[in-house]
Length: 259
Image (cartoon, rainbow, N blue to C red; front, side, top):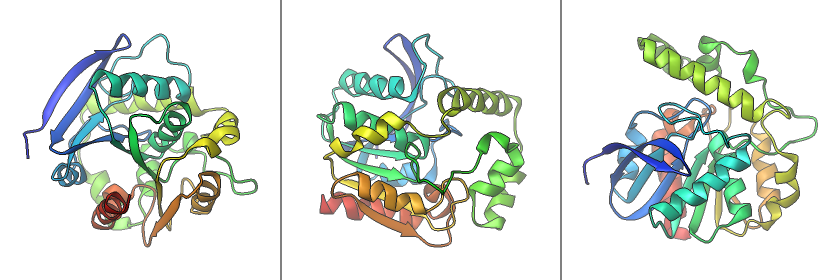
């Protein structure tokens, strides 16, 4: 496996922080509202089989906040430029939570460079009568406790010291998430109208015990995207890639072989 590269690239006028490592076909990981500024164990494992790109979205982490960023659709258009910039083809897109929402918006617009998509507890749609939790009412500690089903894992995460830079980035990420997903909460009615146009092989992965976006939403995405497959991970919260890494990786590899 090639060494992980930590670099910046200017695309659509936005200086973007990117992590890249591995070899093979390209995989674009689109992070959720908490960001993705570090190379995590699941990324290293995926890099055994894929050339893994982990950008921090415009407006998040160490990436700039461009003047054109007003909504999630803008991020989708940005990532179309991102893939063109790097000459990526036959891309596996893995989007978690807000990143899954972005992935769907990309696929509705132009899926030409994408081979398959994996949506991990994605936002973007609504289930009438089953609202998502209001993460804007959660403080930092409550957020960690609610994202993990395992209390032990939540406690381990909370025990990690937070630097001043971490605190600043967390505040930046929360502000941008509010700007993009405040109203309506974590969804786009226009996406609901057009998501049926997505014709990519799609795997929807969900933690059975997700406290942010209930597991009932998995069926909503299966119904909305023709041919989508669903895999539910037991004893798992909102971030399967961190809480149930083995099961998460097995799901992606199995799906990649099948599609």
